[in-house]
Image 1: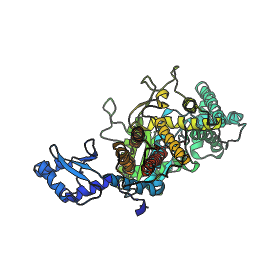
Image 2 (image 1 turned 90 degrees about the horizontal axis):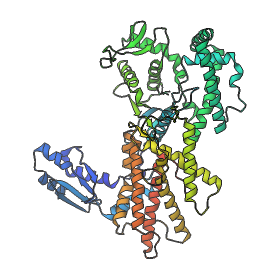
Image 3 (image 1 turned 180 degrees about the vertical axis):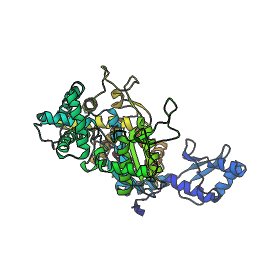
Length: 597
Ligand code: ARG
């Protein structure tokens, strides 16, 4: 847990503490400290305080300045405008803080959250026997980033991939397979994780799905047998379950191949699909009915809400059990809540799911609250994400109007990124294998970054040209900055330049200060982004880091013979820490930082 050596309060945090000490009456009122162009920071909080106390803001600001404790992070404070405080930080304080971060190991001095908890995160939940689409991509990408960020802040995270592996459609699929048992026979071993195996598995599943659907639609006898098969499945009939397993296993081969391509670690033990809660469904219904949370209505077991009504003004209930006795998506989710709260002992349930399921989750969460399963101490949150649009701004479809296959998209991204890598490697230093590896890291990174860099709730355009561009807010730009840093560090070593080292006694150029203060804020930014489940804030921070680095690199020569050795060492130190910060931040987003592009 939070050890003192890994805990380096940022300059900004230290300023906040100093301001709080100067204004004890303010309690924990926000000093509204912001980076500023005029000085290093501006604090605007005095205005609100003065208004509350009916005091003159400029006078109050002057009093605050007089009461500020001696602090190593304050060089100069002046009152400006109606009562702002402009604060300048000494160069030395910036460098000392950065040196402490660099010395603090991999965490770069980032403290853990003050009160870490236990989160179950529900993400990457495709459906068995179905192709994955861009919506599943979003859940996987956002969920993976948030999971990494949470763990970084000290949270205990339990992953759950709530795959769609249960329901009436399996009656049809299983019945068909029982009547045509050779249909899912594999030539390759199903434990093998490869692209080819994944493709073959999906095409098998598609074929079986189409054939069984056709039979279901035209053959009444088959339809009947399929319906009875659902009952056998829910009753746990062994032979039926064995056939069901073949679908799940075949699908896992496909999922694993895709998640592998996405460079994502999905562990088998964390895949607990809808079927995993089958044994709890009846009990969940009983509990809801006994407590009066759910009532019978037209034969179904329902939960009603004052504020959920259909277009006709009639209340739309959450159906926990259908009138034919069947259970649906809601019963499963309610049972999963009980499991996650009472067995897994989570205090936060996080669902990374499409915004179009917001009403479902609103009703499910409200039901769980009424039942006493969720409370003040245990909360459930839907991290709802928007729709993926094509470059034309319409929901993402092929020209023929079909939904785009995820594999094809990822392959295309990798192909384009590989071309970028090849072009950058004009001198031909990389082998073909290296080009392929970097191409995958850049291409997959680009897809993830495009998704993560817009706030999750917004729709975003899937525009491959823009994604793999070296200019603008892309991961390629950030990865390129990282690669350039590695190349400078290599050149420095080769030319016998002094080793990177902070020299707090040196004055800093404006671009160095800007970069330095920004690097110092890494931990604050990660904690804030994690607290808000907002990977896009971390993405924005990294993009800005790369931009500030570019300005620094243009304005401050690093390996110049005109520089004193300590200036070279100090600038190399800034380069190195920028590199570490970029790599750490990209890592939290699930994006690789190759040493060269
Ligand atoms: N499998 C679902 C889908 O494809 C998403 C599951 C979300 N998680 C949950 N607990 N309902 O839409």
